[in-house]
Length: 259
Image (tube, rainbow, N blue to C red):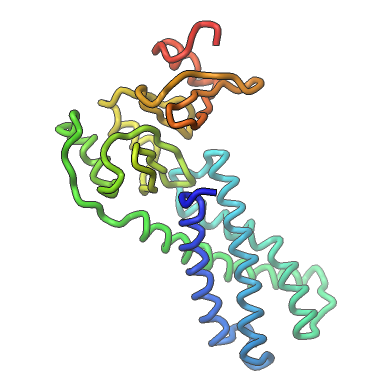
């Protein structure tokens, strides 16, 4: 998998590791008095790593469904509460194995869920803040695009790192961020898709899916994958065209009538 996939996960894993070290040091929920230092650190690293994996899974499902894109707080809370459900059983197993507790009644699990939810909510919030800090770093303004005198477009371009240049190929909704692809790579920006559509209105491109905007110059052709209609890009990527946007794309001349 590409660096574009692994880099955000690496940032999040660093945040998880730091939280695990902190919890291992202070020993919340009586783990300080009932565990040795090594056992305590291993316990919290395992629990937090599993909780983070569940948060990441829920967030990815929300991203693929293009839900909560413009509601970062709701997305963080939803991810944390959903992640706490499977995590509570892992914690119950760990409590039985390490501290000899149990068996857990439904009432015990309900109380334990509340404690776990507090931890996963804090974990999701810290990971989100770490990601937002990385994504939201200010980028120096740069000129050069032929349409760069447009204020809205310049505002959009100024969010991008200089290394990406200014030739935008596609914009992809990723959770409540946007991944902007250019001829030199991609990076995340903290912006809603609806706002991006306003700022990119002067470019020769269009929204082809609720999660995708594509520049005309990036399109090499089209193809079908079963019932799915795909735009084939010059860089080899395949972008889905949703049914609600297919007619607009066809009327723009991007697709033949038979598509």
